[in-house]
Length: 208
Ligand code: GLN
Image (cartoon, rainbow, N blue to C red):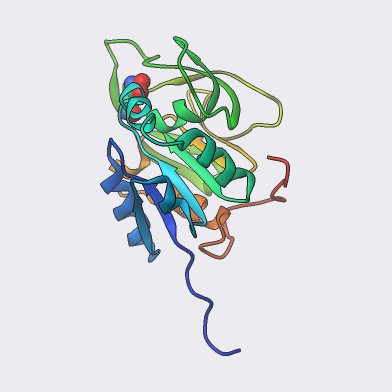
């Protein structure tokens, strides 16, 4: 058949936080984007990103519908689920201090882990998996305290993991969408099959 296949739709959870910046970042890459406010809007997406914001507020808003069940099912059915900052907190298996989470990523995260003196900063992180370096803004950022062996580290800051992947789950402790750097959005879109794979290496494990 002639012509290119249609670009697959990518979703941005638009309940709270800086979802508009994520939507703009995907649109810059030429992808069709849907801002997702109802669980029914997960239908037909190749992937979804949970933005930064405030995880406690997000959790309260997510209580209105069966978000946890539906997002887990979306992932189990082959969808890519990414999260930045508060979104990464929601993805982790365990959160300190303790709060509810989707547990799609085998990691323990600590909220607001950089302390008051440096609670926000911009940094360039070493990301060999993404072709070199990625710029990010850290805003009251969480830290990964522990990662299970099946979690791959894609980027580090001062030796510490700040961007990780487990199968179809990608989590960053920083905000890539607040910079001009689109490497992370490109990576996530490739993983979801929305762009031809150039950055993503290795098999996509069906189990994760
Ligand atoms: N500190 C926030 C939280 O715990 C996350 C901050 C962010 O997303 N920039 O949810």
